[in-house]
Amino acid sequence: MIKDTVLARRTVRRFTDEQISKEELNDLLMYASMAPSNGNAHPVEFIVVSDKEDLDYLSKIDKFGAKHIANVPQLVLFIANKSLCKYWVQEASMTAAFFQLLAEDAGWNTGYIPFNENKTDDKEDAEDYVRKHFDIPDNYGVLAMVALGKKDERVRKRKEFPIDEKIHEGKF
Ligand SMILES: Cc1cc2nc3c(=O)[nH]c(=O)nc-3n(C[C@H](O)[C@H](O)[C@H](O)COP(=O)(O)O)c2cc1C
Image (cartoon, rainbow, N blue to C red; front, side, top):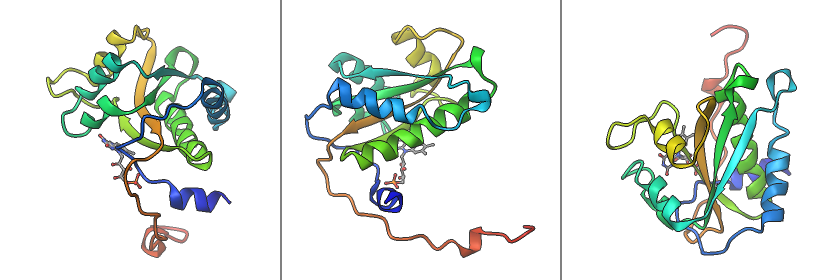
């Protein structure tokens, strides 16, 4: 049931060396691409990264938040063709969220790290830092990286959240 997948999904930062097959990853990304999309444009594309030097490069974007990325087995960059859509952040975010749940449901674990609106430790625009290394065209927004693998750490299944104070009936 989808609720069980939502409860089970936790951010993972330490993974085993196991890599997903290209076929399985492509299948997960195909389903993630079915997230809602303005005008049915589906402008989101993916860069799959597993090369150690590339992972090292991405890990240097933030010495606290992304250090562990040097040691993940693979990750996916979520980018969106801004020439095809008006709401690239929402498009890529929804696709990434779908991907995290699909991966969890298939027995994989994930962790999300954003680039947009972010600066590197050297104060460079984080999107530009990633764009130049991976030859991403200027008309693409570079939203985030989602690390993917099998967890090598203990993570707790979520408990249900108290929600009543966040739900407003009719007006705030
Ligand atoms: C916008 C956003 C930014 C995040 N930034 C980072 C980050 O820089 N590094 C990281 O390891 N996790 C990052 N995360 C993951 C959160 O830390 C994580 O979702 C949060 O601690 C809740 O834990 P859970 O995902 O296990 O429920 C980010 C998540 C979101 C949605």
